[in-house]
Amino acid sequence: MRIIDELYLENPCYGTRRYMAILNRMGYYVGRKLIRRLMKLMGIVAVYQKPRTSIPEKLHIKYPYLLKDLKIERANQVWTSDITYIPMSKGFMYLTVVQDWFSRKILSWRLSNTLDVHFCTEALEEAINRYGNPEIFNTDQGAQYTSEKFLNILKENEIKISMDGKGRYLDNIMNERFWRTLKYEHIYLNGFEDVVELKRSLLNWLNYYNTKRLHQKLDYRTPDEIYRFKLKDLLFILQSYWFNVGYHFILLIFIIKFNFVII
Image 1 (tube, rainbow, N blue to C red):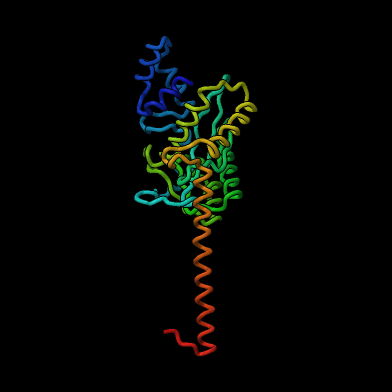
Image 2 (image 1 turned 30 degrees about the vertical axis):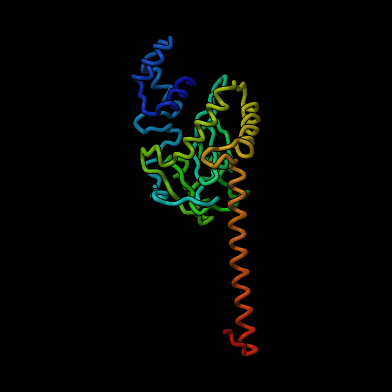
Protein backbone atom coordinates (compact mmCIF):
# COMPACT_ATOMS: atom_id res chain seq x y z
CA MET A 1 0.00 0.00 0.00
CA ARG A 2 2.84 2.38 0.78
CA ILE A 3 4.37 1.88 -2.68
CA ILE A 4 1.01 2.58 -4.32
CA ASP A 5 0.66 5.69 -2.17
CA GLU A 6 4.10 6.93 -3.27
CA LEU A 7 3.33 6.21 -6.92
CA TYR A 8 0.03 8.01 -6.58
CA LEU A 9 1.73 11.16 -5.27
CA GLU A 10 3.98 11.13 -8.34
CA ASN A 11 1.08 10.73 -10.76
CA PRO A 12 -2.57 10.61 -9.59
CA CYS A 13 -3.81 9.55 -13.05
CA TYR A 14 -2.50 5.96 -12.91
CA GLY A 15 -5.04 3.12 -12.90
CA THR A 16 -4.83 -0.54 -11.91
CA ARG A 17 -3.18 -1.67 -15.18
CA ARG A 18 -0.30 0.76 -14.87
CA TYR A 19 0.17 0.11 -11.16
CA MET A 20 0.30 -3.63 -11.90
CA ALA A 21 2.92 -3.09 -14.61
CA ILE A 22 5.08 -0.89 -12.36
CA LEU A 23 4.82 -3.21 -9.38
CA ASN A 24 5.64 -6.25 -11.53
CA ARG A 25 8.76 -4.47 -12.82
CA MET A 26 9.73 -3.83 -9.19
CA GLY A 27 9.43 -7.54 -8.41
CA TYR A 28 5.98 -7.47 -6.78
CA TYR A 29 3.92 -9.93 -8.84
CA VAL A 30 0.37 -8.92 -8.03
CA GLY A 31 -2.77 -8.83 -10.10
CA ARG A 32 -5.21 -6.06 -10.85
CA LYS A 33 -7.79 -7.55 -8.48
CA LEU A 34 -5.51 -7.11 -5.45
CA ILE A 35 -4.42 -3.65 -6.58
CA ARG A 36 -8.06 -2.62 -7.06
CA ARG A 37 -8.89 -3.83 -3.53
CA LEU A 38 -5.95 -1.92 -2.02
CA MET A 39 -6.80 1.25 -3.95
CA LYS A 40 -10.39 1.05 -2.72
CA LEU A 41 -9.16 0.65 0.86
CA MET A 42 -6.90 3.69 0.45
CA GLY A 43 -9.58 5.71 -1.35
CA ILE A 44 -7.60 6.12 -4.57
CA VAL A 45 -9.46 6.28 -7.88
CA ALA A 46 -7.55 7.53 -10.93
CA VAL A 47 -10.63 8.84 -12.66
CA TYR A 48 -11.03 11.45 -9.92
CA GLN A 49 -7.38 12.51 -10.07
CA LYS A 50 -7.17 12.61 -6.28
CA PRO A 51 -7.42 10.28 -3.28
CA ARG A 52 -11.07 9.56 -2.60
CA THR A 53 -10.65 9.52 1.14
CA SER A 54 -13.73 11.76 1.06
CA ILE A 55 -16.37 9.80 -0.85
CA PRO A 56 -19.34 11.86 -2.09
CA GLU A 57 -22.80 11.17 -0.68
CA LYS A 58 -25.45 11.59 -3.37
CA LEU A 59 -28.17 12.75 -0.96
CA HIS A 60 -26.07 15.50 0.61
CA ILE A 61 -26.30 19.12 -0.55
CA LYS A 62 -23.35 20.40 -2.60
CA TYR A 63 -22.20 24.02 -2.62
CA PRO A 64 -20.54 26.08 -5.40
CA TYR A 65 -16.81 26.73 -5.63
CA LEU A 66 -16.21 30.30 -4.39
CA LEU A 67 -12.46 30.59 -4.94
CA LYS A 68 -12.39 30.95 -8.72
CA ASP A 69 -10.74 34.30 -9.56
CA LEU A 70 -10.76 35.20 -5.85
CA LYS A 71 -7.68 37.10 -4.70
CA ILE A 72 -6.63 35.53 -1.42
CA GLU A 73 -4.54 38.17 0.31
CA ARG A 74 -4.93 37.82 4.08
CA ALA A 75 -5.00 35.28 6.89
CA ASN A 76 -8.41 33.89 7.91
CA GLN A 77 -9.87 34.85 4.55
CA VAL A 78 -10.04 31.22 3.37
CA TRP A 79 -9.56 27.99 5.29
CA THR A 80 -9.43 24.58 3.68
CA SER A 81 -9.58 20.98 4.85
CA ASP A 82 -8.90 17.53 3.44
CA ILE A 83 -8.24 13.90 4.47
CA THR A 84 -5.32 11.65 3.57
CA TYR A 85 -4.11 8.09 4.18
CA ILE A 86 -1.12 7.65 6.53
CA PRO A 87 0.78 4.32 6.26
CA MET A 88 2.23 2.71 9.39
CA SER A 89 4.45 -0.33 9.97
CA LYS A 90 1.28 -2.29 10.69
CA GLY A 91 -1.90 -0.86 9.29
CA PHE A 92 -2.75 2.75 8.56
CA MET A 93 -4.63 5.80 9.84
CA TYR A 94 -6.48 8.72 8.29
CA LEU A 95 -5.36 12.30 8.90
CA THR A 96 -7.39 15.47 8.45
CA VAL A 97 -6.10 19.04 8.76
CA VAL A 98 -7.59 22.53 8.75
CA GLN A 99 -5.25 24.91 6.91
CA ASP A 100 -5.21 28.66 6.39
CA TRP A 101 -4.92 29.11 2.62
CA PHE A 102 -2.99 32.39 2.58
CA SER A 103 -0.31 31.58 5.16
CA ARG A 104 -0.33 27.75 4.71
CA LYS A 105 -0.46 27.45 8.52
CA ILE A 106 -1.96 24.20 9.86
CA LEU A 107 -4.55 25.38 12.37
CA SER A 108 -5.69 21.99 13.69
CA TRP A 109 -5.53 18.27 12.90
CA ARG A 110 -6.98 14.92 13.92
CA LEU A 111 -6.22 11.23 13.35
CA SER A 112 -8.79 8.47 12.96
CA ASN A 113 -8.89 4.79 12.02
CA THR A 114 -12.19 5.32 10.19
CA LEU A 115 -13.62 7.87 7.77
CA ASP A 116 -16.33 8.92 10.20
CA VAL A 117 -17.30 12.61 10.23
CA HIS A 118 -16.42 13.12 13.92
CA PHE A 119 -12.67 13.63 13.52
CA CYS A 120 -13.37 16.26 10.84
CA THR A 121 -15.83 18.18 13.03
CA GLU A 122 -13.42 18.02 15.99
CA ALA A 123 -10.64 19.55 13.91
CA LEU A 124 -12.98 22.27 12.62
CA GLU A 125 -14.26 23.19 16.09
CA GLU A 126 -10.74 23.35 17.50
CA ALA A 127 -9.59 25.68 14.72
CA ILE A 128 -12.57 28.01 15.24
CA ASN A 129 -12.10 28.03 19.03
CA ARG A 130 -8.40 28.85 18.71
CA TYR A 131 -8.33 31.24 15.74
CA GLY A 132 -11.85 32.61 15.24
CA ASN A 133 -13.92 32.34 12.06
CA PRO A 134 -12.67 32.44 8.47
CA GLU A 135 -14.69 34.19 5.80
CA ILE A 136 -14.80 31.10 3.54
CA PHE A 137 -14.27 27.40 4.25
CA ASN A 138 -13.34 25.27 1.23
CA THR A 139 -13.42 21.46 0.99
CA ASP A 140 -14.08 18.72 -1.54
CA GLN A 141 -17.52 17.13 -1.93
CA GLY A 142 -16.78 14.22 0.39
CA ALA A 143 -19.50 12.78 2.62
CA GLN A 144 -17.75 14.12 5.73
CA TYR A 145 -17.83 17.71 4.48
CA THR A 146 -21.35 17.61 3.04
CA SER A 147 -22.81 16.03 6.18
CA GLU A 148 -25.37 18.01 8.15
CA LYS A 149 -23.22 17.91 11.30
CA PHE A 150 -20.20 19.47 9.58
CA LEU A 151 -22.18 22.07 7.61
CA ASN A 152 -24.17 23.16 10.67
CA ILE A 153 -20.96 24.24 12.42
CA LEU A 154 -20.10 26.47 9.45
CA LYS A 155 -23.64 27.88 9.23
CA GLU A 156 -23.85 28.59 12.97
CA ASN A 157 -20.62 30.59 12.71
CA GLU A 158 -21.79 32.41 9.55
CA ILE A 159 -18.93 31.04 7.45
CA LYS A 160 -19.38 30.91 3.66
CA ILE A 161 -19.24 27.35 2.30
CA SER A 162 -17.18 26.54 -0.81
CA MET A 163 -16.72 23.11 -2.39
CA ASP A 164 -14.43 21.86 -5.15
CA GLY A 165 -15.99 20.93 -8.47
CA LYS A 166 -16.49 17.17 -8.89
CA GLY A 167 -13.23 15.61 -10.06
CA ARG A 168 -11.39 18.95 -9.86
CA TYR A 169 -8.00 17.93 -8.46
CA LEU A 170 -6.61 21.48 -8.61
CA ASP A 171 -9.47 23.24 -6.78
CA ASN A 172 -7.98 22.24 -3.43
CA ILE A 173 -4.36 22.29 -4.56
CA MET A 174 -3.17 23.79 -1.25
CA ASN A 175 -3.96 20.61 0.67
CA GLU A 176 -2.55 18.40 -2.10
CA ARG A 177 0.77 20.24 -1.89
CA PHE A 178 0.80 19.91 1.89
CA TRP A 179 0.15 16.15 1.73
CA ARG A 180 3.07 15.75 -0.66
CA THR A 181 5.37 17.73 1.64
CA LEU A 182 4.26 15.83 4.73
CA LYS A 183 4.70 12.40 3.19
CA TYR A 184 8.01 12.95 1.41
CA GLU A 185 9.65 14.94 4.19
CA HIS A 186 8.35 12.97 7.16
CA ILE A 187 5.96 10.02 6.78
CA TYR A 188 7.98 7.99 4.25
CA LEU A 189 11.20 8.58 6.19
CA ASN A 190 9.86 6.96 9.35
CA GLY A 191 8.20 3.69 10.32
CA PHE A 192 5.50 4.24 12.94
CA GLU A 193 4.84 1.23 15.14
CA ASP A 194 1.66 2.47 16.83
CA VAL A 195 -0.79 5.37 16.95
CA VAL A 196 0.82 6.92 20.02
CA GLU A 197 4.16 7.18 18.23
CA LEU A 198 2.47 8.54 15.10
CA LYS A 199 0.60 11.23 17.06
CA ARG A 200 3.72 12.35 18.91
CA SER A 201 5.74 12.47 15.70
CA LEU A 202 3.05 14.41 13.82
CA LEU A 203 2.74 16.90 16.67
CA ASN A 204 6.47 17.64 16.52
CA TRP A 205 6.65 17.80 12.72
CA LEU A 206 3.57 20.01 12.35
CA ASN A 207 5.01 22.41 14.90
CA TYR A 208 8.23 22.45 12.86
CA TYR A 209 6.22 23.01 9.65
CA ASN A 210 4.35 25.98 11.14
CA THR A 211 7.19 27.67 13.01
CA LYS A 212 10.52 26.69 11.42
CA ARG A 213 10.14 25.37 7.87
CA LEU A 214 10.81 28.16 5.35
CA HIS A 215 8.57 28.29 2.27
CA GLN A 216 9.76 29.57 -1.08
CA LYS A 217 6.24 30.79 -1.95
CA LEU A 218 6.19 32.76 1.31
CA ASP A 219 9.44 34.56 0.47
CA TYR A 220 11.34 32.12 2.71
CA ARG A 221 9.29 32.80 5.81
CA THR A 222 7.32 30.39 7.97
CA PRO A 223 3.52 29.95 7.89
CA ASP A 224 3.33 31.16 11.49
CA GLU A 225 5.19 34.38 10.64
CA ILE A 226 2.90 35.11 7.68
CA TYR A 227 -0.23 34.31 9.67
CA ARG A 228 0.69 36.51 12.65
CA PHE A 229 2.15 39.31 10.48
CA LYS A 230 -0.96 39.69 8.34
CA LEU A 231 -3.29 39.64 11.32
CA LYS A 232 -1.22 42.40 12.95
CA ASP A 233 -1.44 44.43 9.72
CA LEU A 234 -5.21 44.03 9.68
CA LEU A 235 -5.49 45.06 13.33
CA PHE A 236 -3.34 48.15 12.68
CA ILE A 237 -5.57 49.15 9.73
CA LEU A 238 -8.71 48.77 11.83
CA GLN A 239 -7.20 50.74 14.71
CA SER A 240 -6.11 53.49 12.33
CA TYR A 241 -9.55 53.59 10.75
CA TRP A 242 -11.41 53.92 14.03
CA PHE A 243 -8.91 56.51 15.29
CA ASN A 244 -9.51 58.66 12.21
CA VAL A 245 -13.28 58.25 12.49
CA GLY A 246 -13.16 59.18 16.17
CA TYR A 247 -10.88 62.17 15.51
CA HIS A 248 -13.12 63.63 12.80
CA PHE A 249 -16.26 63.02 14.85
CA ILE A 250 -14.82 64.92 17.83
CA LEU A 251 -13.63 67.71 15.52
CA LEU A 252 -17.11 68.02 14.03
CA ILE A 253 -18.72 68.32 17.47
CA PHE A 254 -16.12 70.94 18.47
CA ILE A 255 -16.84 73.00 15.33
CA ILE A 256 -20.61 72.85 15.83
CA LYS A 257 -20.45 73.75 19.53
CA PHE A 258 -18.04 76.67 19.19
CA ASN A 259 -19.04 77.82 15.69
CA PHE A 260 -15.51 77.34 14.35
CA VAL A 261 -14.94 77.69 10.65
CA ILE A 262 -12.29 75.57 8.91
CA ILE A 263 -10.61 77.39 6.03
